Length: 101
Image (cartoon, rainbow, N blue to C red; front, side, top):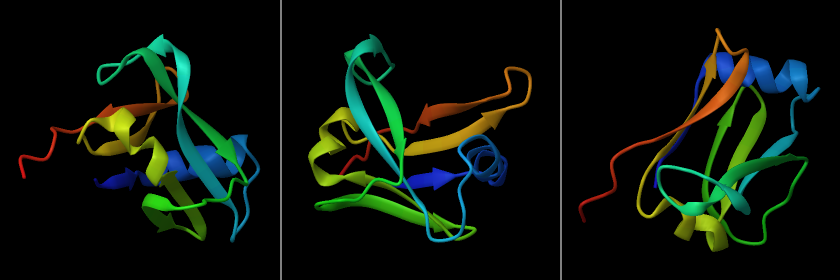
C-alpha cells in the first residue's frame, strides 16, 4: 500500500494540528461513517501517535505519517492520498485503485 501526503495537506496539518518537526500523525479506521472502501467505517487521524507495527508510512517536511499494520484491512488493497480541498478548507482522503498483485 502506498501512503501519499500532498504539500498542501502537510501545511494544513502543521497549521491546524500545530505540528513540529519530529511529530507524527497516525491514520486509523474507526467504526461509524462511510467511505468508498469500507461501509460502516471511516478514516480518522490522531496526532502524536506511535505505531506498534507500521503497515505504511511516509515522512514529509519532518512529519511522519503512518498507518498501523492492524488497520490495513480498511484499505482493501487501495492506496491512500491525503490532499487539501481549498474550497472546503479541509483535508480529503482519496483511495487509489487496489493492487492487482
